[in-house]
Every structure is written in structure tokens, then in C-alpha cells.
Length: 490
Image (cartoon, rainbow, N blue to C red):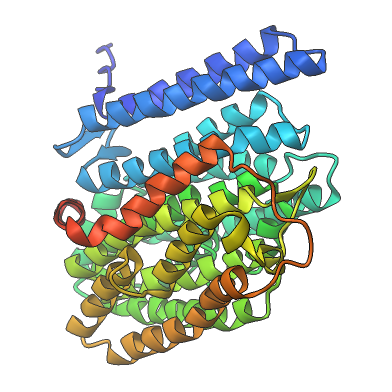
């Protein structure tokens, strides 16, 4: 019998490293036997610090294997400039989330070594998702991410809201996975393959005469992916999970999984189903319009800042889907630029939310920010920058993120979609600017928030603020990199 060929593992080195690191940290945490509160604290700090080092080393490995298009594991895994771009954003978001989480978990007496391990495993799943070139590897990465996130949502076991959010996320996530699997089985049934390149070739050979069953399968696949990006009408889990989950977990949910799911959405729609663009374009346009509209109008009534950010993220997904609806290289470039800016805006906002403490308790109402400009002028200025950027006020980075998306839509003659995007952006400016008004013009009714600002939070705020404010001075590196990443999909 001929010997089986050993696969080339170089393209998957970052993922293999993360998997080995996660298992090592899990064993380290277990064998430290943290049976006392002090032991638990030491184990949690050790795994968090080692987890941060793991993320940085994984980022270096991503850069090491970047540049060329590399395929391995019988064509199921691909490393290309698009995957590299998405992985860098995912690792940056995960690193920031892990940095901000430890202090909060210690203050809430929820510090356990498993937190860092779960974040690493979720990150591993996300990186597998964006490198998937087969429906099977796509599903494996998606489920590894999802299972880790279900546990993270319910991480604060003594909190009823956290447990409830984890349960809701699990039940609805299982339904989304069922949609995705059923759609994948239909696609396999009508094309005879699960490989992205072969699906694309099969569809192209059919010369625009597609079986109805294939279109139905594609709709189910899109429904499963739309749930993962929390696009309307598959958004129902988002506000409850964002509000109920521990705040560091919410900050993680808001950035890394969003980037991974949107990158996966782009790869699936532009890769195997690119030839069916005229079939799915209308669906994506509808998802985009609904997400932008619901995200803008529903957030107006929110008083809890985490719920407000949940609806805000739904609106941002709508803008990103506008770029997908364009269905060309310029649209994908716009989405990637938008995602890069979105990461820093959201990390910055959640750094501020994590610093909102009064005594030994967290506060989450937007009215608790009253008087923040007097007690924490630096934090108020940073939060104002992020709010202005999310509203799309020039010359902040958020303006350019929306600009490239709108320009791509106009170039593709999707004028109605672009106009709706601009109008919903104006509506959303109301609740972003309301935060600034409360911070600077309302009088505080209670004691000021905790002072001084924790060093880690201050550092994260500084980095994110600098990126958002100074982006317009040197936009070329991001635009060029995003263009190269988008070109690799076509």
C-alpha cells in the first residue's frame, strides 16, 4: 500500500500553535490545583498573562506565513491575504479583550483560569473559519467558536442574567447551526462536493441555469451566517446576550466574532457562490436595509449602554453588508476597511464601559455617565471621540469607514441602498451624540465613577483613540492592505 502523503502544516501553523497553547494552559490551570481563593487568583493571572503572550506569538506566526496563497489538508484550509487580514484583526480584538477582562473578573470574584483558555479556543475557531475552503472545515471552525462563546456568555455562574444569556445564545445558536448544516447538505446534494473551488466551478458550468434546490440551500446557508453576524431578522439574541453576559465577554462578542463571521460571509458569498451573485444580491440588500434601520431606531429607546451597543453593532453589520451587496472587489475592500476601524471603535467604547464602576458595583445606565467630563476628562474625551467616529463625523476614522462603503454602493448603482445608509446614519447620530451631551452637559446625581482609571484601560483607550483620531493622516497602509486582501478573493 502506498504511504499517505503528510500534509503541509505551514499554512496552519498559527492555528496549530493556538490549539497546543490552549491545551497546555488548560493542563497548567488544572494541575496548579487552585482550591483556595488565592490559588484561583494566581492560576487566573498566570493563564491570562500566558494567554496574552500566546496571542502575540500567534500574530507573529500569521505574519510569518502571510504573503502567498497556501492550501493544505486536501484543500480544506487556505491561507491567503484575505485570511491574513481577518486573522490580524481577530487576534488584535482578542488580545484587547483579554487585557481588559482580568481586572473586571477579579473585582466580580469571577476570576478562573478557564476564561483565557476559552478565549483562545474561540479565537482558534474564528481563525479556522476565515481560512475555511470547504463547507466541512467551515462548520468545524464555526462550532469551535460557538461552543466557546456559549460557555463564556454564562461564565458568571452565580448571576441569573449571565446564565440566561448563555442559554438563549445556545438555543438560538443551535438553530442557526441547523440552518447552516441543512443548507450545506442541499448544496452538497446538488453540486456533489463540499469544496469551495469545485462548487464554484460546478455552478459556473451550469451557465446561470441553477437548480431550485441549490438556491434553497444557499438561502439556508445565508440564514445561518446572518445569525452569526446578528443581521436582522436573525438579531433577536443580540441585545439580551450583550446585556446579560459579563461585560468583558460582551466586549469580546462585539468585535472578534463579528469580524470573523463577516469575513466568513464574504468568503462564502464571493467564493463558491460568486457566480450566483444576481440570485443572492437582493437578499443581502434586504438584510442590510433591515439591519441599518432596526439598529438605528431601536437603539434610541435604550438606557442600558450595553443594549445600546448591541443595537449599534446590528446597525454596523448593516453597513458592512452593504459592501457585500455590491458583490465586487471594491465592495469587499470597503468592508475590510470598515471592519478594521470598527474593531478599534468598539474596543475603545467597551474599555470605557468596563471602567464604569461605583464602589463595588458596575453601572450600565447611560445616565450614570453624567458629569464624567468633570471627574474623568480623559475618559470622557476618548468616549466622545468614539461616539463621534461611530456617528461618522469627519475627520475621524468612522467617517472614512462609511465613506468607502457608500462609494462602493454608488459605483455599483445601488443608489437606494446608499441613501438609506446615509439616512440611518443620521438617525443613529442621535443616540451617539446623546452620550456626549450627558457626559458634558448633565449634572451628576450620584458619586462620580471609580477613580483613578485602571492602567490597562487607560492604555487601551489611548491606543484606540490615537488610531481613530490619526487615521486620516496615514490611511494608505490600511487601504492598500485591504485592497490586496480583497483582490485575493477574486
